Amino acid sequence: MARVKIVEPRVSYADLERAPEDGRRYELYDGEVFVVPAPLPRHQVSQILVLDLLRDYIKDHGGFAVVAPIDIVFSDYDVLQPDVVFFRRERAHVVNLDAPICHAPDLCVEVLSPSTEDADRGRKMQMFARYGVPEYWIVDPIAKVVEVYRLSDGAYSVVAVARAPELVESPTIGALRFAAASLFAE
Image (cartoon, rainbow, N blue to C red; front, side, top):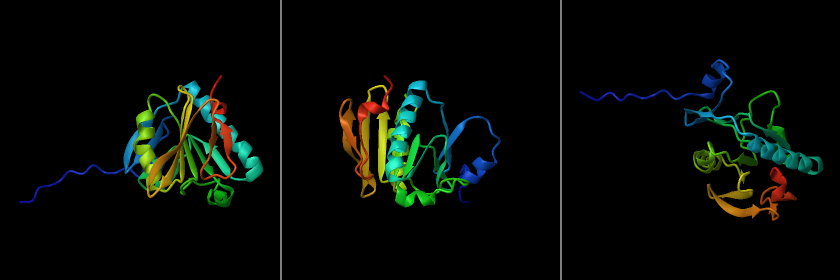
């Protein structure tokens, strides 16, 4: 007689949409649910400063940027909430303001928190690479470091690690250059 294998059902984005609101943020990795803890104030300050930087860029060059909580639905079973996402002017039209975002952003930014650092440097980073996000930043508000990664051959490689007062230049977003210190609380 053949063995019966017990398989846990995967959770889909449709399942998340049907779930009652409980105030928590969720991400799906291959259908496995992960609760995203609420960030600390230092994290939120850096997140807002990243958004401000991108909004200033958008004024001159166009594009679209938003902050979490926002679902990026890469597939039915892969749904992430990056801290900040950015679409270049040429691709901003793929965002429908009245529907979930179902396209890979041009840039995803994660602001590190002690509770999320392993995921931000591990499974989340791998998921962004898997779905073709060309640029990924890790912003560490405690160490005051900005790490810039560029996607090449399906994996990220570090192209810059900047500390205050060093400058950061985006490898994929033309004319985006800024002081690393501008993303951190005083």
